[in-house]
Length: 356
Image 1 (cartoon, one colour):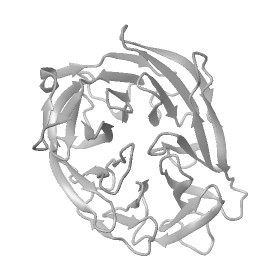
Image 2 (cartoon, rainbow, N blue to C red; image 1 turned 90 degrees about the vertical axis):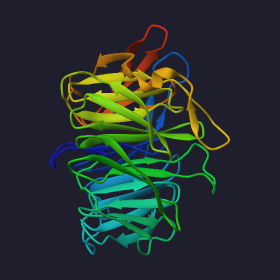
Image 3 (tube, one colour; image 1 turned 90 degrees about the horizontal axis):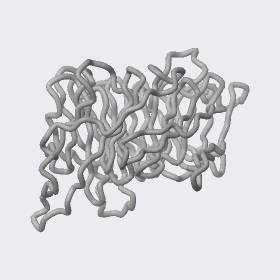
Image 4 (cartoon, rainbow, N blue to C red; image 1 turned 60 degrees about the horizontal axis):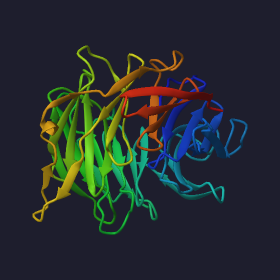
């Protein structure tokens, strides 16, 4: 989730795990918007609000953190929701279809972030990460330590979730060295998958995606110059991407639906798209063969474009609508739609609209 300081008109924005729902937390409440990609050549990308609250609501005031799973009605929030419960430690799991709370849980510490998979609720606190069974969140089923509160967290559920398909979360476990822990949070017994030495310095941003049955992880350090790609569960590095040579923050990272592209927004107000070679099928022994030798070589971006000036430098989130169409939402209150022309290696701004 991208966040702004308190007092800003839009405090935070986040897409659901599938990208089909945009959650907008504002000083005046919360909006959950169903996103609709445009059909055909005309830019008709629009948002349909499925849940809206305001500060005047007696049961729903300031939302500090929000997470939405997939295309479903399931969401989780924390903040000043109830007079009877502490706003910094209470988490509400709701159903936007029935406009009711399914569960209310009291976190062991101050909540600093929420994340969801199809079966798990992940609650970030200053010193620990707590994993709950989302259907029976009575107490945590796992606690991860050590944990760095300021770090980014990546969550990925495969396109087709089955009981045999792993789901992953990934997060840094050091504030000085770029180590990433990859975890399968699936109840009833979450398990660690692997630890990856991703960067020499502190990790700033990471994201997970799926290339067919293979999960991929992208990481960026605080220098913002190099982005590294790993395959899971092996944790083997298969690509290094160069955004540039000067340091900057990486505001957002996101794989396209089948991981043929990776999009990155930099603190310089630029959107970068990298084209990735395909990951070949797993061999009989479970390993993955590189299908293209360039995987191990440093790759530059395919194209880049400046964001609208009002969005430059603002916290952002990315959603890929298709393999060649993506949306950048910013806390400046804008949603920008871009088309990727693979043959010409260029990005075109299709439309910009305001986030209500």
